[in-house]
Image 1 (spheres, helix red, strand yellow):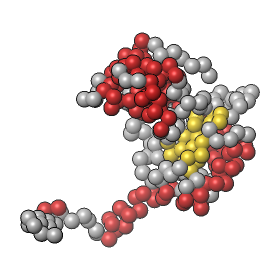
Image 2 (cartoon, helix red, strand yellow; image 1 turned 90 degrees about the horizontal axis):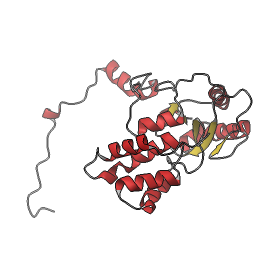
Image 3 (spheres, helix red, strand yellow; image 1 turned 135 degrees about the horizontal axis):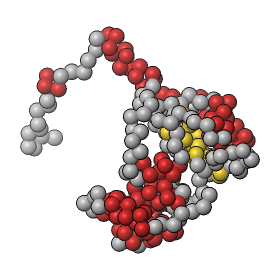
Image 4 (tube, one colour; image 1 turned 30 degrees about the vertical axis):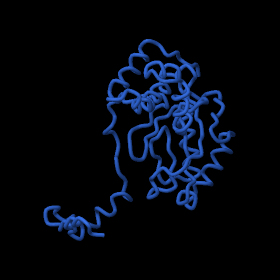
Length: 235
């Protein structure tokens, strides 16, 4: 996939992001997401553009871009698939999912699968740490959207659907969009789909359901005793 240049429109949007914050350099994280939405990854040109807009050094921008794993210095597929193998996901089969996808796609960690004849989209694979979705383990993410309760077979079916251009919906969210489209949303330019799809699953709502069945409710804050403030000199 070709890398688009940082043009005047992108420079304008970088300035727009920086202007959202009292301290412009606080906008660096979404600015880097915007760079990825335009160029697919963090490039030297993108680093220089952010530095110029924020009036900081390229080294400072690079230090941030290399600290967070969400920013990629290498090519990423149209759909970036992250497999969690942290404790619970590993116990529930995350290791097997990652191994199966590596074998099926014939790639390693942080690599893009070759585009076959008939494929309309590319897929990359990453071994990631906890997705904070342990109640749906094992979890896979695609462009930061959840795919819950996966198996090796379902993960292979999913990546095949993505490669051939079929529509795939996340478990708790909208239909999956491309990497660059997702990165633009993370830069702070909404795509209007924030309310598409379910936002919670049965496992997350189990406690609420039990509380409703048993008539439990949270205490009224006005009735909760407030501890007396410690007197001066108290230990």
